[in-house]
Image (spheres, rainbow, N blue to C red):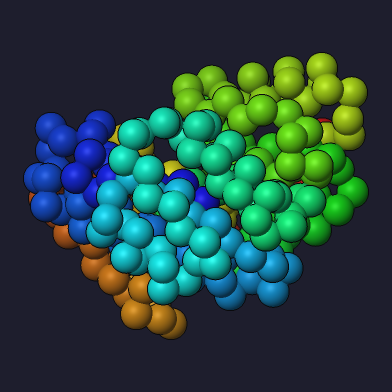
Length: 235
């Protein structure tokens, strides 16, 4: 799992969301994602690569191994570092590369991803736009090199094909939403509104998202909620 330093996270929201609200949102996202991972029985161990001491403090409560890397290697570099540690120090042969900004993530959604990875060497989870990548499952851990960022879904597809290994897309609404833009924040606020969080982390995330959305004076986006648990896999 990867997370930027809280102070520099969610910069694309900076024109409308104050720094303190962005930092609170980043911390809440990390805590909630760590809790979902820790609650997933199909995941044996967690490596968290974080960009600041505050993030490391949050991660140590849940992760088996926490690495504070202030050099800001980017999501791909942090993911590769985490995968290397998982293999070399924890004996992992399969890895799930997951950013810490997926507000609707659940243990069940992660279990769906792990199950999909049992029959494919590479599983790519597209974002809700179909252009980015919100998670990668790799078996072995070096099946392809991660290449996150804009347009990464197509890059990962091309890398998977070039590798000659079996691969698939996993399209799951619980993993499809990440928070990068104001529209993403509005979608998250709408999806989480009215939910009764079962845990302190879920409640704090809902409050942090609502506060950030309120500071940006956001209104609910058009369309249905994004939190449906339905998931499908397709190559």
